[in-house]
Image (tube, rainbow, N blue to C red; front, side):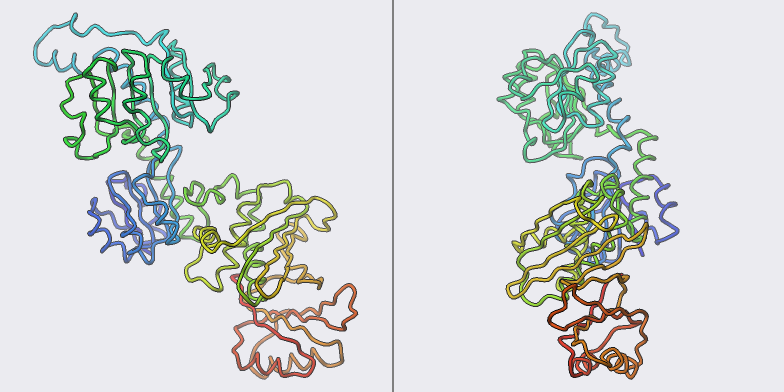
Length: 530
């Protein structure tokens, strides 16, 4: 395997990965250069300079994961990555302290006119009165976005004696008030209360140009604005006008729409009071080391067959959600594979039922695993990333239900697949810790371990049926690992099924011979990713 690392990432990342892959450190490349280069790589690790476009992702036929050493991933085409089955991960915690501290540093720097005063002093001037500043003590800081960075900024600001108000639809009033801040339910109430405003949200459809001419005019005259989040959240032309008119007293900006070409920004050569830094929010030695280690470890885990703890495009597989149900993941995937291979016709609906202890948990990872199993026999390159997208694009209904009643096992999963011609149900369970078993196929009860090669053989209940099937298997030099004969609880139709696990695949000729045995009813070869 090969991993490409670009954008000047700490070399510690390479040391983590070198045990499982060839690691190449290369400079930041253009779209065309990276498209040509990425063909040979299984993983790509970047910072903010590289734009991972649809073209690059489609060229990366072997690409399994893109790791962004930092928080923001707006330089990665998430939709294209998902469509191509590429996991996108980031490091949501690695630069929290650095970004929060830079926010506070910029707030204080613009409040006390530090950059201009430093430049003046280095020129030999002594202009104390010219650079009289303001104190932050007692002022109101408005924070948009109360994630880890926004939370940290709020705590420091409160320690500095500031009043803090927060606007974030994804947090709760209780969590804001717990640290001594005030929660504002909507931005209409927010703008006019703030002496300072700082932004800590990702750039999305909703947040692009969130601060614009309209919102700037609704703020207090003389407000001060800080942005260490993402370029594009502020309309830079509108901010320049507000700075030059005095509506905004000063601004401290670390991120821009035109990075790294700062000369293309309307804020370049702005005559207003502005402090500008070149995207330094995460640029501390500690943060760069932390994010490099974090993302490298996730890439290593994925390339080793595990799952990433901070996957942007598969939130169901984040570690805190995955951990409680991880013992069922392989079983859920196998059930999806099994029920699809048993079923003829075009897929219409998938019903997933979980019982026992599983009913108390978030089973989103199991839903993804079932979908991956179902589509693996008909879609090339299906994985945990693109399986839900495949289901959505095909208009397939997925319904999940939960029940804690009458469960014989620790926990069980039933998958019912409906096509345009039939319906089949398979059930799996943990019969003990780390002992997953297939326990039911339609009306037949059993307990058998999922294996890569299996035969499902419905047959009439009459003498020598098992012997006849075993003889055909032996004649074709196939070894039987395990076998069970399962009957319906009410076997009025005199039909049972054999479930046989074998050591290799079965060709069409062998299956034809088995199905020609008198009394055999549509025997099927099943191949699982067990």
